[in-house]
Length: 378
Image 1 (tube, rainbow, N blue to C red):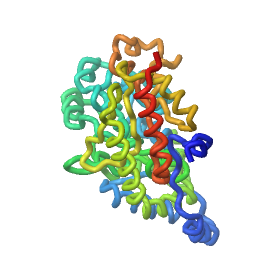
Image 2 (image 1 turned 45 degrees about the vertical axis):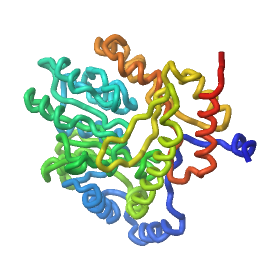
Image 3 (image 1 turned 180 degrees about the horizontal axis):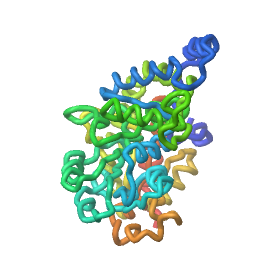
Image 4 (image 1 turned 180 degrees about the vertical axis):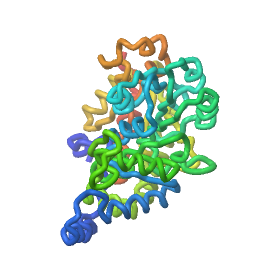
């Protein structure tokens, strides 16, 4: 059995898909309606269903989360400088460059790996117009403190909530904080529509502006209000989303069991720490560990050891955004400005987690790490 497991590749994630037979009636309906895009019936239903499930006022569906980010910045008319985190996927900061906005990077908190509010305040200049934090690994940012800073300095807040589908704090959905929140429905996410995304906003006029922006700026058949883009979600993606909503709670519960199993098995290992889920309601989208100098192997060698055993963990997020050439020359990208982010990027390793991860595969992952911890590699 052990040899068989080693010969099988275990991915860091795998998209959840319902049984194909469940999706066929949706496809038949699309063929019957002959409506493929442009706010079709499934699109309208999914916006309404998601607003209800997520407990948010307005949902605007997008073809992907990156275009949602780009459009959100335009919807709020953001310019100048935006304070953001270097510890994220590049889409977060790329969306700023696409809007000719200068990113200003500040360090992160060591216990959540979210943007550090104390560093935000120190980075504000007369050119600062907004804050773009990320709910990293689905853990909520310090939303109250970020709001206090934004209110005092008259700044907008756009939350990159790509990891945070369904996440709540003690009061409500974390998607209700800030001026706008962004979701990703990419295949790797807890809730996927093959590819997709959404903008969450709080009033009807803003939703109207967002919906115009994602449809070339059209207000009606002959009127173009803004220089928009084509970022509409198709009926195929929306139909899958409606079906996925029926299964998402079960998928999250299965993720939770895997998350808890990892904690039970790995939390006592010297040199390995995990990032706990601090939300009142989590989605268990990732299981990141930090491998420090007390462990028998450094992070990269543990990554290679897992790979040799057919386990594809991921160094997520590594490298930092600020290590890429389009950001490296920014003054805020200096390594001495971002000590926690750099250390975390060099130590982080996300272990495989998805609803269909078999129990024997989980055991193989755990046992491989345990064997490294018990081996003297000197």
